[in-house]
Length: 234
Ligand SMILES: NC(=O)c1ccc[n+]([C@@H]2O[C@H](COP(=O)([O-])OP(=O)(O)OC[C@H]3O[C@@H](n4cnc5c(N)ncnc54)[C@H](OP(=O)(O)O)[C@@H]3O)[C@@H](O)[C@H]2O)c1
Image 1: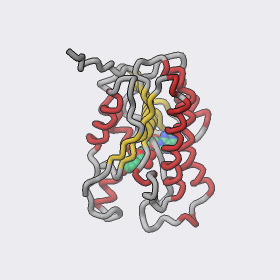
Image 2: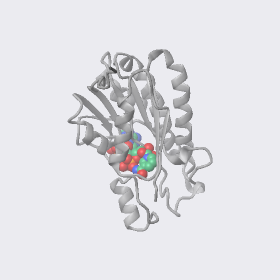
Image 3: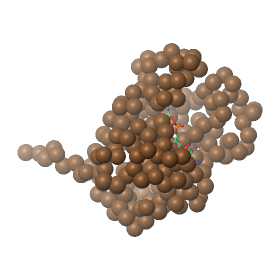
């Protein structure tokens, strides 16, 4: 007989971007399921132990990783992110995007996840689970760009970073997954649909995204899901 109940319980989890939107919903789901949940953001997280940090800044990333220094980390969930002013509306114009805005979007969405992963390699190696999840976007796929230049570049780049990291970290046993969703039913997206900023559509329920994360984290250390595209039907 095969053993089908060999899942190892997740005890140590770090969520970047746990104060709002997708990260908040994922933190709410896991806070009673994991022993030690740490959430990182600039504004207070409702769930887990909150570390106040701006991840666009190296010192912020250092501070966010501190709780896991010399400690095991089962799962790093990089779920935070940012985008340009007026992004995804007709008011966005690349020509009006400042250098600071471009720097910030790429720092938070692309550079920070790379730096978090590097700092946390020793902690992930101490875990029997060793999973990293980055939140991408369908607009980061080939030839599916949206007009927001820095945001699209960051999401496209994140996929390349994950592929390179997977090769480089093969001997560590760490598995990296990029989840690329369409519009997810966060309060902000629901509001944008209700006010007509977004066209009429059915966004992806947060529970679907959580199901995908849970599946990714339930895999044994022998396998990983490199990339998951989660699209809307309508
Ligand atoms: N919602 C969607 O439909 C959707 C679809 C596809 C992809 N995504 C991606 O999913 C990610 C999250 O989206 P969301 O809708 O959940 O956004 P959100 O509601 O705006 O939440 C963003 C989270 O990231 C954190 N964050 C942003 N900048 C930060 C910084 N400099 N330092 C620390 N934390 C920072 C925020 O915390 P603080 O502001 O408190 O710092 C917040 O917790 C983004 O990368 C987005 O591109 C979202």
